[in-house]
Image (cartoon, rainbow, N blue to C red; front, side):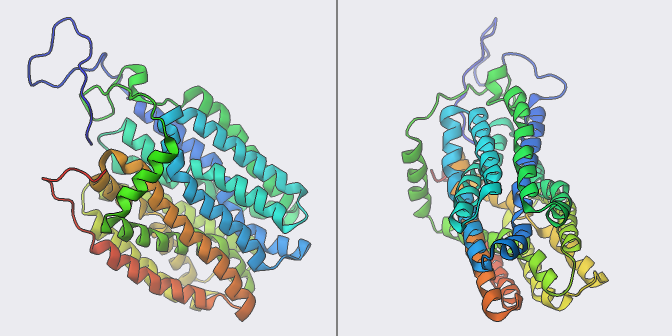
Length: 441
């Protein structure tokens, strides 16, 4: 990472060639870890919205008479806006700071989820859950993780990005069984209220503890002896965000990263998170049992994602991505044969296997963005994430459409397995940036 070194005030000037000293020594526990903890809890609270979509399809279809394709279209808009908002959110954090952007995002999610309790028409669902929750959650997407790791960490970036990515899965673990129980016993409106409250309750942590930059407290980033002054606010947010996309789009590696990550989104948020519960229910499995299986994926994913961050600090991210996508594709090809009214050992094996691979792709993808795009990595990664959510949105709608037409999800599972083979190939052919060349910005 390229940084502008500005010597900290000192009684005696630093000898030539020695890195400038931090204004004050770092405490025993570097504040970067507290920022990471607050970020984890923030993402955890906001993750309640991510647990809900798959649980809404059946009750909305039954109570309001909306088709699965109609409901899927609203959820697709939410997923796409989640992705498209992310790069602009990263630039907004550079302009206004992390704390105000995160606070506004949580407020918008809470209002959107809460307003769904009065909806009676499909466009109400599109506006509340699709647009409002989509925009708010986009600001707390993985671009938020990229910004935190870029500003606060020099060492352990892969590990921290893995931990923060796992927060989404942890939120799924915490909220999914509760929301499934509430949908069955209290109705889907009660579940929407829980989502709104989860975002509201995490707000005090953001306002009190989330810091913007190490320089705000006179310290260097974790793992560095060089004090980095806080950069001035960057104006022209929209222009900078679009310009970063235009520059990145001129490099073939961007399209490889975006294409592979689109398939990642299609096979996680778009397919399994949204359609696994209704698909299992089609085969006679109770909704609460299917939701509990998704929660187990969330548990195992914490291990897989943190482990992937640890591996990313030590091995080629290209090879890791190739392995992850290959294993995911094989698992999806077997899934239709595992669906049954009860939970058999092969289904448990799939859940554990798929959980380890769920978002393990994020740390190596983020590492490649840093390697190739340098200081612009958070914004570029935001655009790569946008492709992830576009893939998720397309398959969310397409999965519901295929189910409406054929009465089964089998074709979608098989197609997703084949797509994963393409994602593995795209990842393996990404060219390493020559060390003699500067990062593409």
